[in-house]
Amino acid sequence: MPLPQKRSYTTEYIYSLPEGQRAELIDGQIYDMAPPMRIHQKLVSQLTKLIGNYIDANHGGCEVYPAPFAVFLNADNKTYVEPDISVICDNDKLDERGCNGAPDWVIEIVSPSTERMDYGIKLFKYRSAGVREYWIVNPLKQTVMVYDFQDNLGTKQYSFDETIPVCICQDLAICVNQLIDLSK
Image 1 (cartoon, rainbow, N blue to C red):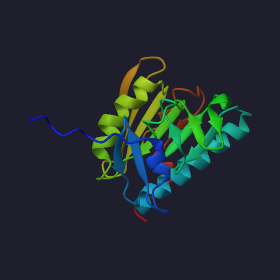
Image 2 (tube, rainbow, N blue to C red):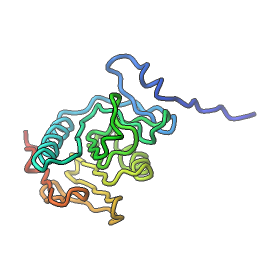
Image 3 (tube, rainbow, N blue to C red):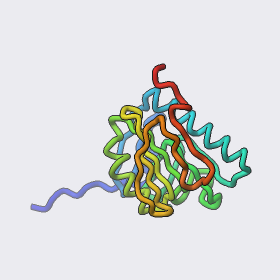
């Protein structure tokens, strides 16, 4: 007896979801997304503001987008993700729907429901798609994993109280504890 075939989805399915329902599509497989917690949104907001201010102050050509922002990672209809923060430095990748291809820098904020995706599936997909730098920010462990794919310098783990150099921006460094007060 043959095994049942897994259904393969496309971005057409993503766009047919009811208003307010979010999901990501990786290699034709659907991954539902739970609403984020408050600390998650606080981190996204503060990091987006800091990165945007840095870009503006340095008259940079990059753009920063918080989720929900469509990233067609492989520029096809089988992979659609919404990174928590996307930094795109090649404006040719941007259109009205989002980003077609790999952002230069992706930041994901881990929640218990996304841990497997962020540390596993997305890590592999971002690296193979050409993302230059990937951060996984874990508010529960108060750590940031930095993957430097651009210079192949490997992975480094930082605590929230350390100053973290940004690989793609030589003079930008971020201390998460200076952005947010976790006691509130």
